[in-house]
Length: 270
Image (cartoon, rainbow, N blue to C red; front, side, top):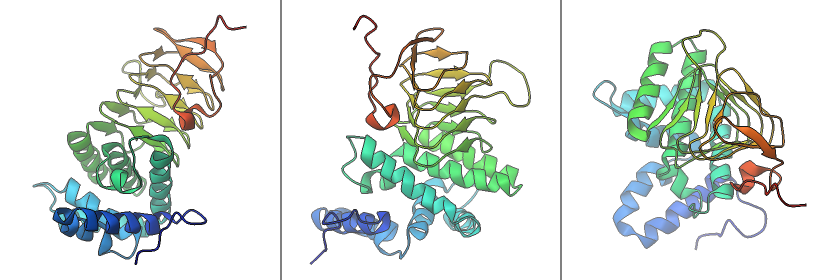
């Protein structure tokens, strides 16, 4: 009999993931071998991530075992990477109604997989292994349609929802707890060098197709509406919309990145 991890306190991520994989293997025997190889045959989350990401990222340039060796080395060098992966999975579970649990983001959601690939690439960048870091960036762009420069810094508990077309530049910073939807760009404004990309605060919601350009700041728990082009600093706890984006009021809710409320405040309301 399988212990239900939802009884009492929330289960640790790895325990819940294994529970869901066991249940899925029983429900869909045709995937039992895949679930065993990707999750159930491992004793720790880092091992499972190393295996699963390597299966995705392998190429003629680097075989599966080579990629897995690099990822395992990164996790051994920086155990915090696994903790970040846990917080990223929890973020998807809490914010994405399409997620039935932790199994879907771990196995299938390209936003989660692209973000974990970036975290590996960033660790390689920190180690001075720039060519290998760029290789991982390139593979993530090819596989997941997500292009994040290895030097970009991304905090814990971030969700890349759907993720297609997300682009994040070299000197960009994304604070913890943010949610970015497909088509978001954190880019520069030309050929300038040095610190040239946006700095996104904590708990920010960047909606579909938002473009934030230049070395500007988006304050904590701000919301950028769909299709907006942001060229100036955005104050904390407000909503901006338009081309170019302008402040249209306070968020319609607190913690917009968690609620995923993409509405624009009604300026006519008293």
